[in-house]
Image (cartoon, rainbow, N blue to C red; front, side, top):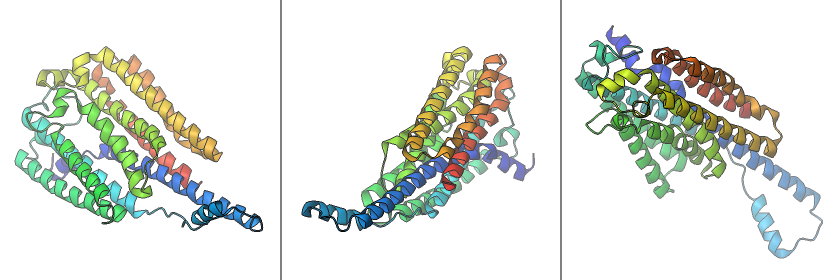
Length: 343
């Protein structure tokens, strides 16, 4: 394996679409909220124009005047662009750290199924990967600071500090997945961190940065993306069941076994589907916009995937399924963006 191919392999490009799915979905949610807010202002203006001759009580007159003075909100495209760059940085850092951690601990060995890792192949030395992790972490932190500044400025200092701490925590989480004596990926906690950072942190975080507010209904798509991301990790852990068990990597799959891991997989995907359906239905009832159902098409290949998992008895045969679920999740995000852009 050449040096360039080794670095591309270590970056694991096929994982990147999944990592940015939450940003795309959260941005789409923010676009919907801004669009609905501006439509409401337009309707209020029309109502005001029709009833200018009517007598309005003084206390109502003041509040109505305040509503009419509100400016229309603008969707700042720079914010999701910076968020995408930052998220890609986090994911590449996580991939480098995963390669490094599993490489130095011997988890990546001849028993492992899937593409050979960079350190495992010998093309990249551990100290080189460590240096790349430091550089990626610094660049990602700079990008995160730029994102926070563009979104919140210096006025909202406390919120800015919260997001900065969140960014630093994300960097820590990316590294500690497999690196160190207490790597949480080796204690069955990977699924929890993947859900939190790929789901609520990603979807609701970008929503807050764009709209400057938090709406509870964004929890539904954040759960969907978070759980579908967990499904990808669960597939990875089912595939690597034997090699992880031998290496002492106690993932949830190692702890509960293949049969229960499959049941866990079905539950995760079912809940993700229910949350997505509720979110789409809520938005349809609010907007009567039929194209809002477009993202649900992404669940068709996921349903076919569930039947494939049910029929599979050899864990190594699950390797192609990782790409299917990851790309279906990305398709859900892309279709969400398309549905709101043509709104």
